[in-house]
Image (cartoon, rainbow, N blue to C red; front, side, top):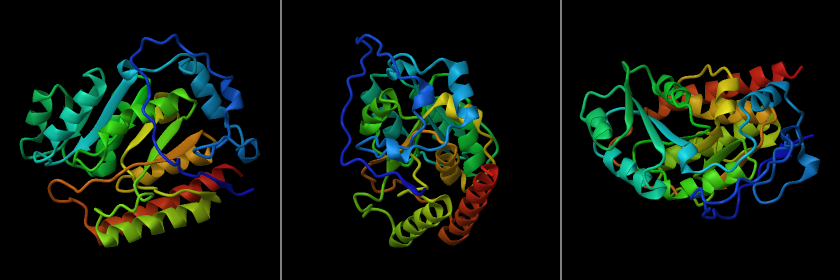
Length: 291
């Protein structure tokens, strides 16, 4: 049966100051459906995935109420000295300095120096592409909730409370949908390409998704640890597709998308072709895995 993830109609602000009593979670084996972002429909339940269930059992993180003390915000950084300070200051302000920040950096400018000045943990590596940096970033923290973002000041750190709230409500992955509000600040060619990527992925998975290449997502750490990631330029799409096909609870939420600070490092033609190839490859691998 074809399944769909519908975006939320808005993003609420959560009370996550850590003063509440922990809330008991449902049995994790009962949360295998891919839920509509606004309503959970038992008719859209996916197949239970043994890996997902085992990962949750081992981590023990289903019970409890996550706060900013449980949150790591991670990013790959490359020559973003024009924007990195603003992004880190926004994270500091929104989380009251309680979230861990990890940057995996291959810059030749002052990006790593600025990041350290703002309290981020910086892991330096030779530039090897987007996916190599981001995979290193998502695997570095040991906190139970990991949020990915970009360091170009396009993503709204003000939505971190809403993303964490969705995780506390039972989501395994929360994915920011930039296209819901139109993404007018995104170049027209890129916007068209992102709609096309979502269409290709939706067709191949049999599940409607709206933004496969967004850089802002929240994950339970056990999701990251339970899956082998293989893509580089197309990692952002892979980070959505594999959890979704394997039956994790994935929710898309609308987010605003800001104008980029600095110049993009990705060639739209070459990069777009690599992303499309990754989407097809990952979707087919996951469908074959189900056989």
